[in-house]
Image (cartoon, rainbow, N blue to C red):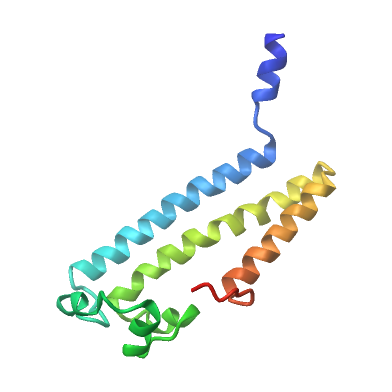
Length: 142
């Protein structure tokens, strides 16, 4: 009985792979966040909006804030990576995409194991997440 319980507690190959990639991605994303924040906070890279002026705009909605500073929504931040206050988005975007990398990485293992339902689910997950990240899928909530 105890041996059956131990067998059920072992992680599958794809679970171990997913977790390993997620762990590496988490640390890489954290490093990106720390580095880009340091570049911003220590003034190594000048911000688009001066720090001392930020509190003047806290009452604006996100839409009004972006319009006031002529900042494009969606992936518009990529064009502004030369500014310290936009560098932080690199780590955030990377962390958001780690799940896509994890799902894509387990597909070969699932194929090898002939887990076709999970293969389809993983592929659909990648497609939906990539479409959502690209802005192709939009529900207008923000």
